[in-house]
Image (tube, rainbow over all chains, first blue to last red; front, top):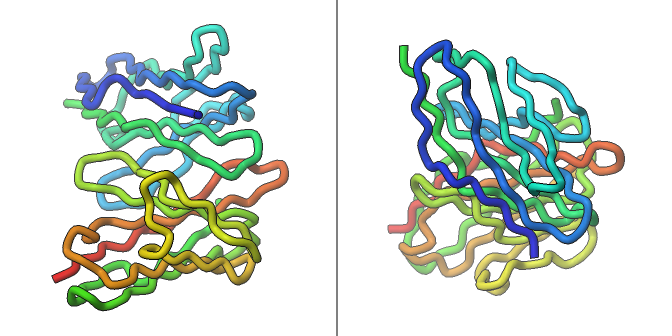
Length: 109
Length: 116
């Protein structure tokens, strides 16, 4: 069974502070991992996928297979980063996309 | 990015009636579509996965006779909530996977179902 855990339901930081949203997973195969973001009253949007190793809106995430983690990081948080962030895992067959519980990021001015 | 359209965005129905929710991939062919349910302030709960032309795979605890999923084409999947009850009131979200070299899924805007 695959499982995604986001230990923090809420993360509150001040503007300009570093941010790390934690994500741990459990999966027996080689996972495809993603971060999705949901801004207020908008649909879920893909933020990052681990295979791309890209930086989007200043966010990066590194897959650590040893620690089974895929934490999302940003060195300097902005107020517009305030949103719900979901870590998600797709199985190898591509027929199951499982989400973590989500972390609400609040960036205070 | 790829666009997924969900319709209706909001629906109110009476107990005992059935409601159909459509999920369309507008600019790509979706090999797989997912249906989720989201309760207030909670994460997305996967209900079922559907592949075009085959029966949907339901997650444990999801009644397949209650939540009928049809994936008739590569661009359309439907979720029908049959004999709706007030406890079926929720936010239902679909997503569609491009497939191939693009494993990620794109999401519809969701449907708020209220059963009265």
